Image (tube, rainbow, N blue to C red):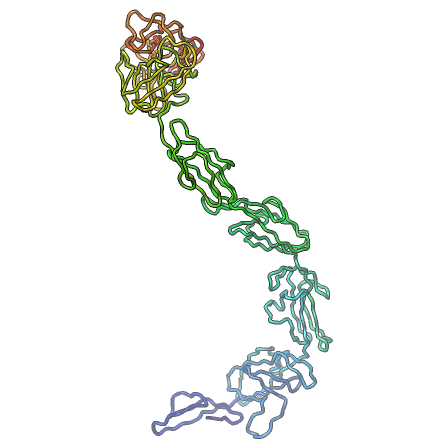
Length: 618
């Protein structure tokens, strides 16, 4: 252990000429002869004094008392004298506050080094010049206690640019300057918002403060007065609820702090999806009011609640999908119902179907039932396909005509389902009354049949029927007979055609038997024949179900007209089509004034118009 004498500093040990100097206190393990030498160097003597006398300083963060004069060994330095190595640096300071024997408070102001002010707390002193003594004076000023308070307590203010002080009780030197700033709005530890009203002593929110001399005796107290904003807390007992405040989303629970008189626009979500089949619907505020409302702060805290009600979807499905319609009571525009609702469902079979039973969330064989909507529901009506004739299923075989009626001596089409087992076509004539074990009955008379199929039966209507409503019954083998109604009038013309793409093109024959088509249009001045049915009686008797004779021609009793726009053309001949049953032909010459392209034609007989057909015209 090496102890330098006054005026020197220890630099380290030298062992057998090396290694380099090391610590003044060390352990040495003897392994053989050795020469151990301490190395010393001249020091710079530095004496510390305080103004006033007897206060403490910090040298390299170590407290140094300077009150008592040295006693004892004259070779030991007094506590306020230091021998520093030449070129070494040291940190100077003082305790934050300290008291003299009279109880006065003192705080460090600055260090005086070589007659010059070097700085205050944390001054770095570098020792230069061995054997040249120097005195450093730590100058202190009277301290004053400064308390910065807020009313109410808990609001943080900024002091010298910092608002994270553990305490707002300070000891500052008299005459020192400090910047104190009270925020215009502040939060306390509980998150409540306050508005700055003013300092108790007046002045702006941000002020520079000089500690006055008089404050050394009684201290200084600053109080920042704040006003607590009224708070409105908006919540909802339903997870997923959403709220917008002045157009911005505010997560729930939403705490709002605003000055008195401030108005806000609240928009509660009218519906919140909880999945494909469940949603929440706005049910009202706890104080009433619509989803979109204006709220004004009125000086008191308020609790507001957005109430929602859960709605579930009811899906009613038929199998096959086209087999039924549903009557649902109470009705819902989108199929959603509140969880406390009970819904009555009735499945009504459409033509050709019969209700069998329910599946899913409804059971039973009655077509009506009720479900509770506590959860999403799916009900499935199982429908059976049954033979039937559509309510409008008996019509002119040429197609839909403006007049929902058929004429005696014409070909009719009966539409429905289960009319036959397979498609079966009959002979061209005479027609048979049974095809594929299928018959069509009109009273006691069996109708001649052209063909039968599961969805359509074409039959010939007797020529002696009078005007009125009739019932046609179709039987498919041993299956129960099914029936449908039709209206018979004297004239109900229809023109045959074929669907080419989405266009209904007339069956218009040339003299050579070829048809006018979009790729082979008719020519102006060319003679054509239109085929139709439902033109009423002929001038001579016809044998029902038998093809018309070729000679002599058998004209219709009532003349027909061909209409093209506003133009009216009288056919060259309208009468029974030779070799065909129930079919009439209209022979005419295409007028030169008709336009080119797809010309729309209609036939009118006795004031009754036919369906529309298109004639490709060159």
